[in-house]
Length: 455
Image 1: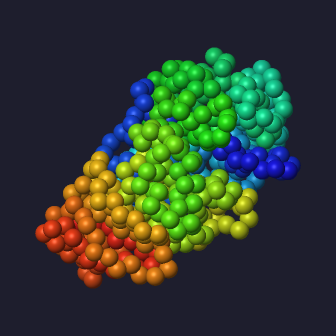
Image 2: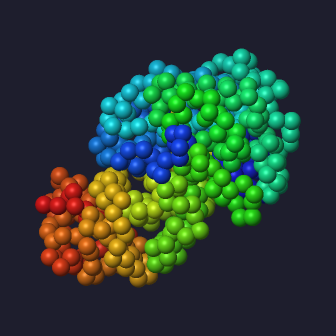
Image 3: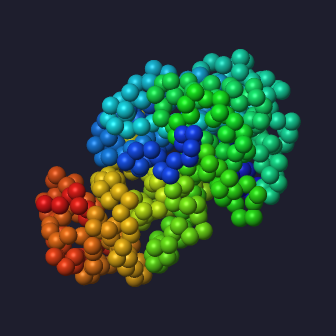
């Protein structure tokens, strides 16, 4: 069966019954606040997320952490079970309501806001007992939804050029909620409001493409305070449902970005990345990412398995001004269905790697400074962010020796791609009074300097 990624699910898994698998009233140009970088800690237990906020995310300067769905879901070890809710209770494998509230509190104390992944387009694909004990059947979820709350189309989406089908039929067998119904909208709004009351700052709306933007706007209208929203809308060439339709609701995940990075970094031609925004959402509407849990499984982007190239692509995302960056941090896998590790081993911890945390600090330091001094040659590139920062990336197989032009003031800087500013011995670089810097950037390595890491 042909597999195709849409709306956060992987079509073609019907046989398993599994799912392979957001801005205040007025759309925000970026997540509100000065710290605009998000870390997605995929399928990470809430208690572990809270500790990560304290130990790494807060100190590194992340503005947001995105957590996987909190709702009660179907039983099973596979990761996609989290994307088949059976009630709106917090009773999944990641923790209960108390663990969730404790996580939000810990993250806020660390200066990190919380984005909750909200699955509101659909419920389950089958019947059974949920992770919180709820007995359910498809189209009947006690105390929540009954048959009349779902769309009348009880067939899988087959034609993505048909808007009606995409937004009213079923995604790989999942019971599709009638989000045009006032009663359904009211229940979804109440669920999202309950998370806001627990301190959640915003939402990633899963499978937003499969709900009309008008329905989503109506749900927001029933909420006391919707918070920040980012919508998952996967671009498909020639399809009638487009990411641009959802920008009035908040930011939108820009899936074309990760595919572009993969092509550039694996193809060895980085020059085109100067204009990476071309053909994509406006910068102020786009949430960018190198990869996520769907794309790392369908091969459309770089992944942790690409090693240093993957790290360099994340460094580029954090250094370049386009969009609002989202660093994906998941776990190692060989089986695409495999759920998260049960213990402390097996996590990629991408969010906490020094090469990444240093670039989060870089982005916070350069702010909205313009991109200047662009230079690119084959597998290498360099650019300044005004007089606030400079970065050089070498995706090649040999060292890059170059006299770079920067817009930085003269002085000695810490290379934050290799060391923390407070512990930079042996990793300093001198910029001349003319803005020139002579440096050797190792193969698959980076040089990153910014004004807040200057001796």
